[in-house]
Length: 127
Length: 259
Picture 1: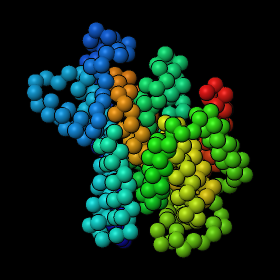
Picture 2: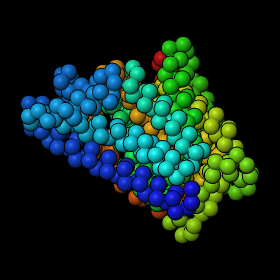
Picture 3: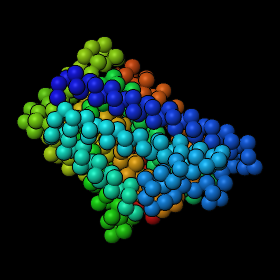
Picture 4: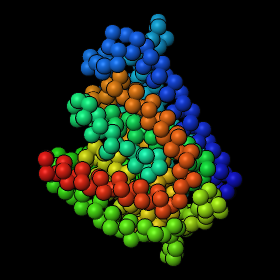
């Protein structure tokens, strides 16, 4: 990989990180605004409706996305979406870096990033 | 603070939440997600300004994520009290090591390493405080990998981000300049925190109404921190890190005594 390629990869990663955090902050803030306008005000409610949980993170995220298509999303769904995007941000940067190294035929780092990606994917799926 | 020192901030966030009456397990889980926010919010700037070393980050992530998975698996085999004392010992060693380098602005006489060269673990960044381009190289990549495996173990076993371990390994073993060390650690902890958060996600400890406000706050703080880091000298970053390290050692010992 040339110096120019490395600069390009750094720029792509930077855009992914900025995009992920900005989008998640917007969604979380909007969800919070709706939450505080509700019955709870500023107090933390331990009602299971606010819980974000599942056995498979990808399956949870997919179900959450699909649920958005059905009617107006609840504040819990909006905040959960913000957090899913936040959690997916480092994952996406590993995926994109792996593809970039592969595309540039930098096999050394393709193998390294592929290993990280495999372990990370495993930890998000198997629990 | 997390953005500046390369620590996730979980060690500050968790006790704060507990003080507000949040049960400890939920506090740790929520802190883990906010570490992702700290990491991504600040690393965006660090990677764009080319202070964080992406090659080194990917190489080291391999070891630290493996350590985290092993740590999370064997955590039930070792008494928590022993773990706290063990890791307090590790942090104390790094505290002593870092103190020796306190007056050093940039590492000098870094031994040449063929493996580090092969892995392209060298780099260059523009230091705003020094007003010049800084070229640097790294050494002992195998020991660095082993250190990062231990950092991962600590993270997996104790449910922490273990940023303090990572920064110490980067500076004392690999001999990165302080800014490269803290920014590269910042970049890495987002990925390790995600692996950690996945465990809490599966155990049902994440509450969106608790995590979301914390994530908003830390993202904004981290983005601000990310913008100012390069204006500090390496020495001041190291002093800030040492102060937090001292606090962490006391916290670990206290947890060990109470466990």
